[in-house]
Structures are given as structure tokens and as C-alpha cells.
Length: 339
Ligand code: MN
Image 1 (cartoon, rainbow, N blue to C red):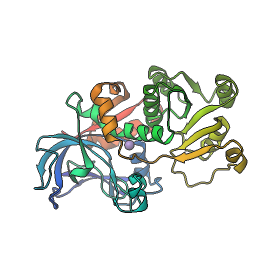
Image 2: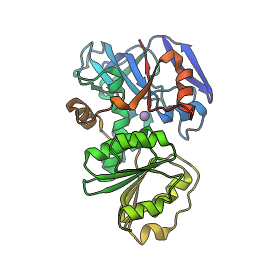
Image 3: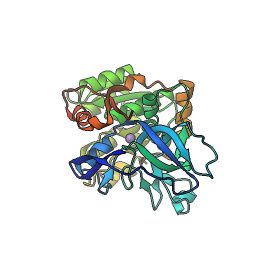
């Protein structure tokens, strides 16, 4: 079978590998059908991920069909359509015991610390898969994983419909969060410097999409909130600067959600947090969010078809990456097919 392996930074190779084999009775063998390309895959490819190790088969937005299963597998049958959970946790450390498995002390993420799903077949335990609703195409189902990230952000923000949310950054992650925030009925403003992304944001229900190149963002947020600030600020830009800026947009008693993995320190004063009792919270991966997100997809509450703009066969990975990295090309989610 073929696998897409980042041997070392900037060196992504299409490799011939032996078929993976079921080793444990709780495992299933999946024929991969489709996969999304995530910003984090691109970071690992370029060696700009602060957590990945090499060589690494990337890809964590993976859907496929079960073609073989171990004796102890209870919840799945051969032929079932499933999505893979990238999070692997130990189940016994402090974080796992208090229900925070996504920040497990021995956390491993498929595609980051162990091989991911850009390969024709993959073996995973049944604890790491979920059924895909029948009404979804393979490529729509790929979008479930990005929405677990959005769900985690909203859960960390303790989002309510009374919140006034400001999302910085309208890339695929920012836009997924926007759709989820609008599902909650909250007011949501979003900023970016790319017009096409702001157009997407308007289509997805943003109450205002702000081009940060042309507007004083702080003034605009204060104008929109009668000088109070946003109750929740989400940093989906993830630069040292954007993290600093969050504190200038958030209201007293508000929440700042950080999604970045930047190692560079940002300059943030104690005063800006203490004096106004700001909660600064990280949001990483997701904590058991597949069931709730799958239900949004099954019920049709969440529509995602319009977010997919480009499709490639997985062996065209280099062409696909070029689309993502070319600022001239207007792109949303890029999906790989494996048939
Ligand atoms: Mn992702």
C-alpha cells in the first residue's frame, strides 16, 4: 500500500509500505476513503510544528470503511463507515482521571507523535473510531474532526447565547468556530486580512467581518460593544502579536481562548489579566467531542458542504499543498480521496 510520509521537514515522500495488520483483539483495519488537509499537517511538513517527530505519516482528518476486525470488537461491523479520533490518552493520569484526556500526561496524537492516516489502510482500536451518519458523503464526514476543535473551543469558553464573541482569524479553524458559535445563537465578529475569507465569514453568518488591514480593530470592537469589549476573544491567528491583542479586545470578566503553539513569548502585563479578572484558557484538540459533533452533522443542524473548495487524489498531495500555500488561490477545506 502507499503512504504519504514526511521523512524530514520539507521532504514528503510517497512510500510503498506493507499492509498494516491487526495485532490486538480490539482493533479494526480501515480502508481509508477520504482525508482533510489541516494547517497542522502543513506545519509538520515544513518542520514548523513545535511538537511533531519524524519520519511521520501525516493526516488526522480521516474517514474510511472497516474491512477487518479483531475478535473482541463489539460496536462495529465489517463495512461500517467510520471516522478516526486522533487523540490517544493513557486513561490513568491525573488529567485523564478528571476527564481531560486531550491533555493526558502521555498524550499521543495520530499524525503528530505516531503515524496518521494519509495511507491506504490503517489499524486502530475501536475506542478510536466513531460511526459516520448515513446522510453524509465521505468528504462531508471529513469535516467532523475540524468541528471537534471548534466544539472544544466553545466548551473551553463556556459559550452561551448571550456572549459577544470575537474570532481573530478566518482560516478553516476560525470559520469552523464561527459556524459553531452561530449555532449557539451568540453574536460573533471575526477578522482577517484576506477578503475572500471574510466573504466566507459573511456567508456563514458573521455579524461583522472585519478586514484588519483597513480598520482599527480595537476601535471597531469597542464601537460594536458600547466600549465594553467582547466577552469571548478567540485567537485563531496564533502569532505572538495576536495573543497580546486578545487582552485589548476582551471585556472585564471575559475569556480569552488561545489556540496557538508558538514558542515565542508574548508581552502581556499582569495588570491586563488581574485587574479585570480575565480567564486566559488554552484549547487543544478535543475532549470527547465526536459524539456531539456527529449529532450536529446527522441532524443537519450544521451544514459544511460549502466549506470544501478543492479535491485531489491523495497521490497528488504536492499539488494539493500548492493550492493551500498559494495566497492567490481562494481555498477553504482541501480534501484528499483515496479511491
Ligand atoms: Mn485538523
